[in-house]
Image (cartoon, rainbow, N blue to C red):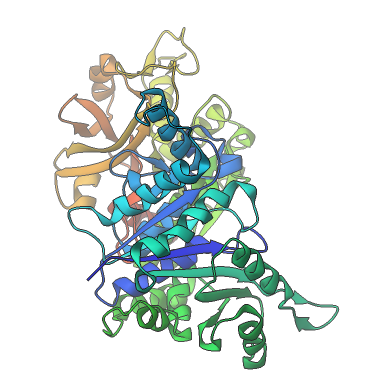
Length: 536
């Protein structure tokens, strides 16, 4: 069977949920026994999101092979339960850089370089690359970032227009996500924005095969028929996508609408039944959760929860496993002082300190960690969160009063966190320790019990690391080095004894958590928080 290509575009406004639509469709097609891969094309000129401010972009999602990617790839991985790669996230910056680098090397033999065909050819090459892997997918879903009509998206739209001619009409499907707003004053849904969006797309030369309409109210048949007539596609290809109680409910809602059945029909894919038993059971468990567990998240970017999207989802997964809803108290790290920390953490059953960069809020994070350490509050530190736990321990247990990270204080007497030997700060993009690395776990530790094995691989994104020059002092002071990278003897996991749950990890376990398969550390952390809530 030839690889099938599905292109997902969006119109009217941004944030309509193209990424969740793509991820949900991927889950539905995979449930039919198909091999599915998903990629995201973003029109901004940054080569990747790695150097972008979280307030602008949200979380940077890291793949096994070390790509810094859009947060939508997290949705893709969580929904289809597949590890994606560098090829799954392509920006305009990356496309243009590749073409310009080739031109500089003389690979175009002196030709005039133009958007068409050179830029569009490079875009198509990136689309096709996913289909030419060793274990080639049956279906490649490509989400085009931005909104139809944006000047930045035009080269991508032109490229996917050309794809139909190149791979064959029978192997190419265009799905357009649009908005059907409800006007309270008129008391009715309005189709005109959708009509205009489809008209804009058609003007580029792309006629959508399927419409997925975001709406707050049910779309009656008469309204779907109107959209069908004006947008020139059969009424059975107009689908509603209403607000869901959970992201993980969206595939089930779209399946009930018949979206995957229509996709299978259009692309002449095998007519196997969708097996959603496990997914339905997971969503049912989530919906039936009646009790809460409260987790305090002390971070730098709490005003924008998308900056910690994978952390939030991993906590949710742990909650589903234990049959509880996870309520997150978002606490700005800058607001936490030694005087108010008890008040700030009041009611919390557990503490998470996530990753980040820079000096802002570090003292607040350490105040929260000290409180958790001294008061038996379950604690999980991620990347920078682990580093802050190390510094806090050095200052208040080992009496290294000015211990710090050399990132913030290069003149500290005790640089217990220091720049990795192979790091260079001249070029910031794509130069950190990125992707998956091996970790060997010490026997008898919390981490070993959580993972059920001593040998793991986890994803990293950092420049600074535990300084092994102080290793003996920390171990003598009672800190457990629970995990190390065997190739470079890097400290990957720290724990404290005689504590319900105190674990810091240099990696990002949240990136590998799945709703039907929560990450072991988040599963056990939420379990410890539940015990804390219940006074156990």
